[in-house]
Image (cartoon, rainbow, N blue to C red):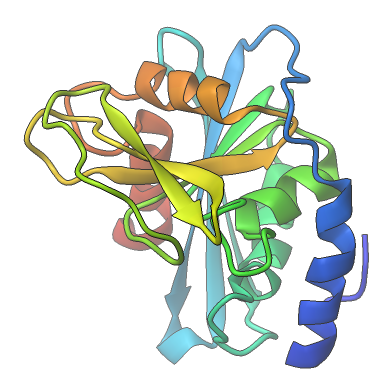
Length: 216
């Protein structure tokens, strides 16, 4: 762990330091429990509302949920969202027992200006395999994505593949998948599709989003 009360320049420097520890290879055990995380805000952004939904895998039956509210201590700065959102997520994860074997984050991982998005940050801090699953692009360029579910095209940044633009429903806008920690991109794509049913978003993300931003 590290201090969270950092200036933006200090936070960027820390991202550059910590990214060297991210594992981009498969180091997963048997996946029995998958979690989704999402964060919403209340009171004009002054309160962080962090949610975790734990699902059985592969049935995707909801096992457990946790929601915490904490004062927001870090400003909104593009590229530094993990410093704003993770304190609440980490607290919510302490309320989930047993812990997940894999976490799907509503956000980016390697597909980030400094290759250290929220999914990398969280996975590294708790040493758990993690995946970034975002609804919109943060960085990179990509070509056309075939319309069929399961098709994908590489997301490229400065000549390097940093993620995948993945079609999770035929004819529906794709998602942006990237490595978080202890997983390869191909395996990350496999688990995102395995966690997706009839909706665009994986069930992990849908359940966590509902708790973080919809339920009162």
